[in-house]
Length: 351
Image (cartoon, rainbow, N blue to C red):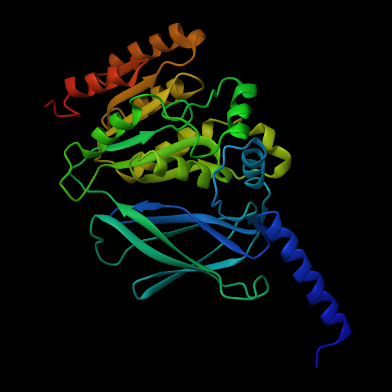
C-alpha cells in the first residue's frame, strides 16, 4: 500500500519533471556517447553520464530568445560520478566507471581483428540507485582503412566562422545563431569533401578527427552544424564539460590538452600519414608545429587559415619552420587557395 509520504514525493517528482520538460530539460539519467576509434590492437569508446541535461533540440527558429536559451541549456548539466557502465561488443562485455566530471572511457583489446569501417556498440548504465528504467545507448567507433590518409581538423575559425580571438563576437554568434543558421567559410565544405574522397574507394572515405578547445557541452551543436553542412563524418574530441556558471568562458580552455589529444591519435596510428587543418586565431600554429616536431614522419601537410591580421607575421615564421622539415604547408585566406595547394601536392586529383 502506498503511504501518504510516498504519494506526496511521487507528486512532487512528477511536477518537477513537467517543469523540466517545459524548460526542455530532463533529470532522467542520460548517456552521452561519442564516436570512438581504434586499430587492430585497441579500441576506445567514451562519453558522459548526466543526471540533468537538455532535451534534443527539434526546432531551429531564427529567434534571439530561442537561440540564446538553446545555447544556455547545453550548459545546464549535472554529472553522475562513480557510476558503473557496461559495454557490449560481440559476446564480450566490459565495465568502467564515470570520473569526477561524469566522463567515462572504455578501452579494450579485441580478441580477433576488426574489419575497417564503422561499427556499433551498446553501452548500458548499471548503477541501479540512479535510474528507474533501463538506460542504454547505441554508439559507434571507426577502424580506418589502412591505405588512406587521415585528417585532424580544428573547428572554430577553421571551418566554422566563430571569431575565437574576440570573446564578445564569439558569444554574440553563439547566442544569436543556432547550429543551422551558423555559416561555414566559403569553399571549405567543398575542400573537406574532396579531401575525404581522395584515394578512397566508392564505399569508403578518409577518416576525419575534429579536435577542438570547445567543450563537450557543444557536441550536439557542432555535430548538427557539420551534418547540416555536409561535412565529412568524423570523430569529435572536445574539451572538458563546463557548468552553467562557466558558460561565458566557453572556448577559453587550456590549449595544452589539445596537443595531448592529437598526440594520442598519432600514437594510435603510427604508420598513418596525417594532414592537419587549423587557423591562426589562437594556438593551432604552435600546437601543429609541436606535433610536426614530435611526429615528423607522420605529417604530410599542414593547412592554416588566416583570420587574424595581427598574427600574420608570427605564423608565417612558424609555417616556414615546418616547411623546412619537409612538410607541405599552406597558409591561406580563401579555401580556393587550399584546394589548389591540395591538387599541387597530390592530395586531390585534378580533373
